[in-house]
Length: 362
Ligand SMILES: Nc1ncnc2c1ncn2[C@@H]1O[C@H](COP(=O)(O)OP(=O)(O)OP(=O)(O)O)[C@@H](O)[C@H]1O
Ligand SMILES: O=P(O)(O)OC[C@H]1O[C@](O)(CO)[C@@H](O)[C@@H]1O
Ligand SMILES: [Mg+2]
Image (cartoon, rainbow, N blue to C red):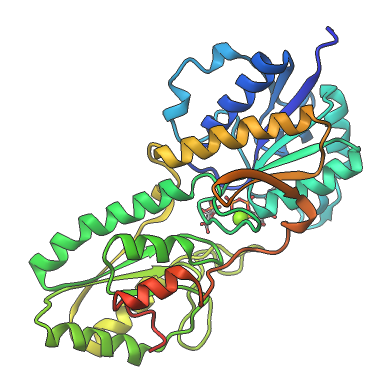
């Protein structure tokens, strides 16, 4: 072994567009800028539970130009199997965090860059504390629900995909006199729905942060009809509940519920209330792929370089962030476990109301 400094990098949580661009930036800065050795850990924390640990050396030859443009993550990722509460086949739970600490030691790394959402960063933060390993987090998630940063990588591309979907739905809605309901992802936050709904000219946007009534939705459709509009576009965030307050999940009974289906509920109710022909599109994982838009590539590049610089400066337990038109960083403890939700008094909600978009509450 040489005495070049070794760092690890992993991607964790749901994949999104722009992860490979972050890896490129991290490797470029660490290898070229500081002369370090970079170990890419496979499948998030899952790779650290395997023996030998599943990992590969990441060098500049891996990033010849194509990966900047490609969604997904070359390292793989996981959004299940919390090592502190690992599910066994017989239903029991096991704390496997010590195995992860051993995995870090096997790799002989002196620092870790963890690219993840709030759930991943919370888990990684506990693991690195246990291993006494400096951690720098990079926020990524299409949901954009990480606190302390205006943007997380992957969000801009997901909003672009959802906006494109509305662009595709509008002509067919108008051709057939239909109401089109589009269900989008976002976990417990409505950021994708709100942004894509505004950008894509939606008439109604439902987000979990703002309670709605079906009567208000009907009133909006009636108003559109009075103005001779023969179609309507409705965007629903996946975590919106039924009018009775029930979450709609695609995996009833599973230990961890996955949202899915509220679009069909809203579509059915709108059809009954208005007599209109309604069609429902559930956009799903399409939002996680696609070519990363320039904004995501740019943030990925800025965050990747800054994360390596922070490790080089001897910093630990920080998350890089974008705030006030610049890159910054803040303590991880201040961001994990406090998801950033849509602010019902915020600028986007205000703009939506100003545009006459119905948010379901009036
Ligand atoms: N490394 C991991 N190992 C096991 N489970 C994980 C890991 N990272 C996240 N999880 C869990 O998977 C779920 C993913 O949801 P969460 O939204 O928190 O993921 P994330 O990392 O924030 O990324 P994203 O929001 O893009 O999916 C959470 O319940 C989280 O606890
Ligand atoms: O990939 P899975 O396990 O179906 O998870 C889907 C969830 O992941 C996300 O795509 C990202 O957190 C959410 O928007 C969605 O609820
Ligand atoms: Mg998350």
